[in-house]
Length: 590
Image 1 (spheres, rainbow, N blue to C red):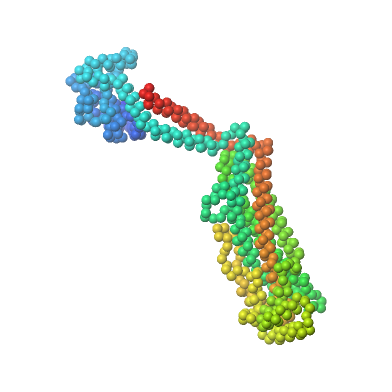
Image 2: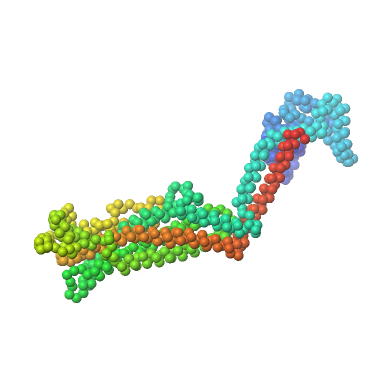
């Protein structure tokens, strides 16, 4: 209802320049405009009939928000105080073109005068006096049914009912949306009743275990699989095994990485030391054992690094799984307890995995299995001879030399042929640096076994980010270094050095296959699968503890939010019931 002070008191013409008055009036006008600007508001523009409507603040304000006059009812007061010979009939009937046009029209009322108030005239008596005035006044007698406070009440009620009927679908839709929203908020805020805490904690733990295992096993039951920008969970761990760790191992090769035990002169000294006083004609096994053991020891660091990377990845999966269980955010103590359990189990399994990997490396260092079915020492020695002296024999001579190397019994004729072949090689060794059949030097060929690193130095493990274990090396530099060294020693020492390096290289290549196969199995079993089983078992033990009520005590913020949300939901449900009653009354006309 717009019932404003006289125009003289409007903020546009304030007679008293005292500061408080403009501020009060301005604030009043702002609040009125904010309210009547709502499209579902019915405006009652109250103006005195004995003043010009053109200067009515109520009409002016209503036209700012309702320029077409579709939801404004004009209320004219003080009809009984108009100058003699004047009336507001033409305004009420809409015949006065100068009056602002209102679709809902104008209604005239006569209120109690100041004398009536002083005389304590009742509202009922005032309404009777008003009715007598309109019934007796010639200008309004024919408009009696459209005049008076009672008619204004009836008209307002009609407009209110129509507005409600018009807005009911929108209001109902908004109420239903708000009720659904509050129910969702309430569902997200856990029920903290003591009777439900244990069952709720069981559900929370089951949800965490399902998320944790789902991320590792790739069951697509947990969130995060929709992200295709990088590998996650078990797929990321598999990439560590099959790409990063595998490449790291196969990038290791004999005579690389600045290993002092494989320095050229150290190899020769080691071989002499193992022979002791008097030397000997043949290479001692102890030197080869030491060489191979030193190379196998190089598997230790990459294996432990791989276990560490899997440990870090499992720690990330723990955090991701906990974040996916949204209800844990309401129970900080339970969340912390689960994190502590998983961290303790994961750290223990990581230590156990490292111990097993160390044992794996040590047992391979302590037992060199020369009888391994894939380690053919005879063929390796024969290939060294071929690389040293060139591939000048025919197939028959090759077979004969291989037979002699393997210790098989030879006829007198075969022995003579073998002596001839060896003499020919001896003459070649006294000449220039021998060349292989393809024209390359010996030192450029003996490294060409399985342990040589790939020629492609691109980084593997796409999608795994920084921190790759891959190390790039230069095979050519090492080969040239060996080539120069071989020219500084005797032919006999050349043969022995090449033999020990070739045998070490062959066994090292064989060991790589075992490491690439076995180390991921150790890590998967001990660090991944055993962790999953122990985590599932130990976090479930939290439910059986006596401190469930303490672990499941929500934060103060959650308690307050739940109380506020519950109260808001109850109010919205009450409003929905009231709306239903209003809708039913409006439809039945009751």
